[in-house]
Length: 336
Image (cartoon, rainbow, N blue to C red; front, side, top):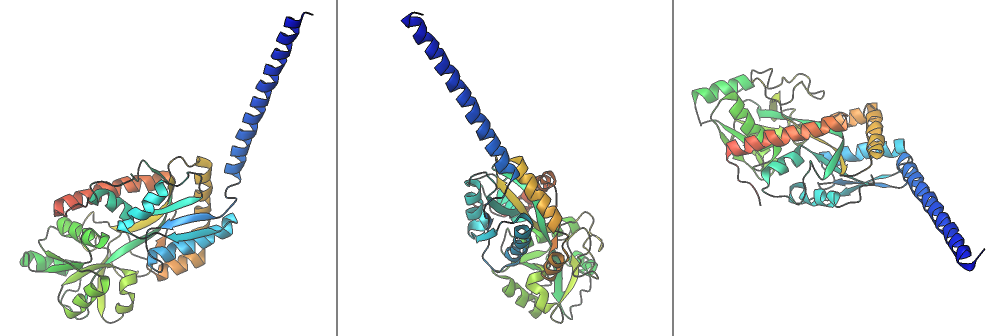
């Protein structure tokens, strides 16, 4: 064999070896990816919470996180990232690696932010994938103990007889409480004055003094007052709450199609592998019915409920549209 032919043959062998090595490496990479997804999680998972420590939403996430840690045999670490109405945490979540090791608590307030801000550094529908809902919080409509208003129907009748004279207390404009009150007045067809307060204690004090006729607030902020200071006239969800089963809903009280429930769930950065999302979703579905989890959540005015990722996304889309319409109708100024 001539020198040129020997060189050509050797070159051909080398090309074949390189090609086979490349295929082998590709196969190893694919196998490694499959194994990493199916073995998830193999290290601690960070759960970003857009509120400070100690609040109801934070405590609820910690209860769920503990259960997921037990179920998936890796620590779920709560990292509080309060600020800018949840924007700080969401921006951190959107920029995280989409591998399932950074989760973000999202929900009703995320939907409100999409509707309330002119521009955000992320889009909850395109920069994130849903995992599952987690906790639901109905609001309460309350009045002071001894008030002549004994029901939502009483308030509506009084408001219709005295347009613009009765008032409703809520916290900050654009909050769930505030928007729920705006939606209530619109749906019930009454003209009222909505008075906003800086904090829940400020508003509760105004209720007890009789400065405002009714107020919209979460159970956790009123629990210590419900015994003898304030009276719950209705809850705002579709059905009566498990923690106040004797209190009727707003719809039961005569306001058709009124349904407001604040909620939260878990989202992951867009591009997170579907097997990872499915693992998280299945784990949440398994731990949510836990009796101690349900008991602890009800004590704080929460009801823990699982959903499919698709149902959570549908709810987010629906809430963005709903709250956007309320904000526009109420003339609430949008934030830059």
